[in-house]
Image (cartoon, rainbow, N blue to C red; front, top):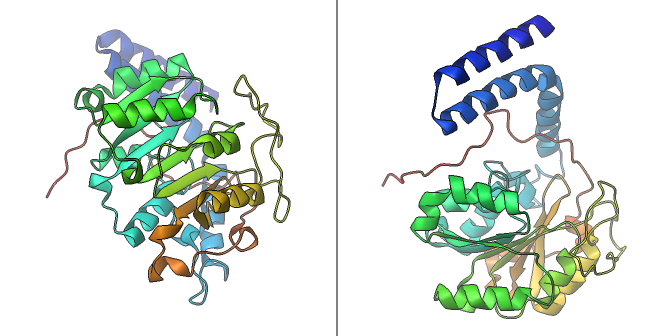
Length: 313
């Protein structure tokens, strides 16, 4: 196996020498690494995918008397099944992805987040992240979206004291009505609860927010607010429990409608938007809670890559 890997690496180096285009070189490296890693991890990836499929076939998710959004989940650019869940919520609310407006905090490089899939379908919105390298990557690889003003990016440490002003500046410069924002996605690892609590200038139709699945309902706890943004250390000490976020959502006029099957994100819909096809989903945290299943795999295909897509009508 080692000789095969060495040969692959040598082949990649030879191809790099022969090419001058930076994007093409990066593509060659990623493809080579991806093939090597996938061969090593194929069993674990396949096991994670099969575990997901078994869950979907279980009575909890395959039951005509109970409707759970996780049964509609899939992954295109999201970390887990969020892309599919957002797609299903939008379908039930009659929101066209091509005409939707989003804001996402903790967008990373844009390769793995909750709104890239919407962007490829014609949506427009705001990405914010505090990492300079992430913003630099987005500037380099999402330039067509930035030039067309489909995407606005901000390098910013997001805190409860500045979030409303940041959003106010965005909606004013983009001429967006506060209640016309379709999706707000929050995943900053620490202060998520406090950031959502502080937002007043927009009333998004749907909120997707990370929860700490290590603490099942009715436990209602949140880490102390951190003025420096907080830094996750890879343990179970981060964010807020689902019950805590559900209490906050209720105060802000939102109903919990589901969770990612991986136990990572909770989804809320604004109360005035609940209709018959959503009413059955408005249940409590105990009903919707999903435990930590971080090893599930939602895609056996290729790695994500940024690029502009043309919609065919």
